[in-house]
Length: 293
Image 1 (tube, rainbow, N blue to C red):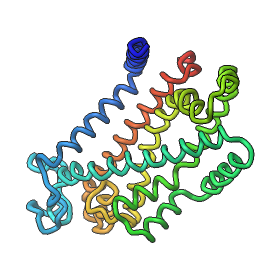
Image 2 (image 1 turned 180 degrees about the vertical axis):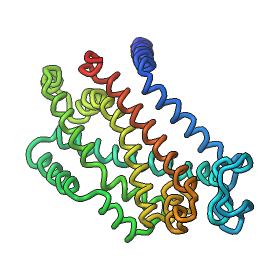
Image 3 (image 1 turned 135 degrees about the vertical axis):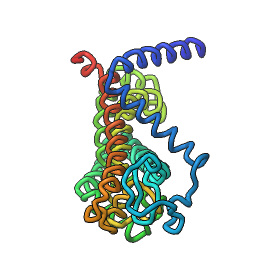
């Protein structure tokens, strides 16, 4: 039985990959993400955190892109290339962990609200609706300002304010799954809440959750960059912090377009890559979208 289940999983993964790789946009997004993650992981092997120090700048101030400095330098003579490279660690870390926190909270609340009907599910949805009507960016900004702008605080602020949409999505899918006849048969045979949610509900919401996660990571990276630009982040270097620095030191008035453009393009490229992967996953995992394609 175990070998049969393992064989079915391998066949399912093989079919999934066979369909996913035919989505050109999804493959471009996946390759971009792999390159970005690998570069972020190997960054400490080539550079150190001292690239963010204003007293360690070795180049000419406001130097335009050149063969020696492909992305130019900032107001302290620091290499924009090295800062973007090192800053990818912070931006991607916050994006992944904040999205993970948001997805976990949304999954637990959504499955519980969809499975337990009556006052329990109603109370969970009223809490969800309350968080949903709050402006997430302003709420995250207030939380970051009150609790401090550390990496942990930014992750908590983004994760706590962005889970309601996932919760409503998972709740709807949970209710659709539990309306199927085999769930009634499981209940008649004595299946409990834990069995139904873990053996029947979670496997059916997992594909939807996977596609939603990629989009949540993209949203979290944009939110982190916005919070950093607004001054709510204490991180020394992230892509949002670099944009904030370009604004504070008047890069636009100095004609240092590279100081604004390069971090912005890094954010755009990664967010677009996550979005392309998410759309491709939706097309592969959603039978209706697959038929349309």
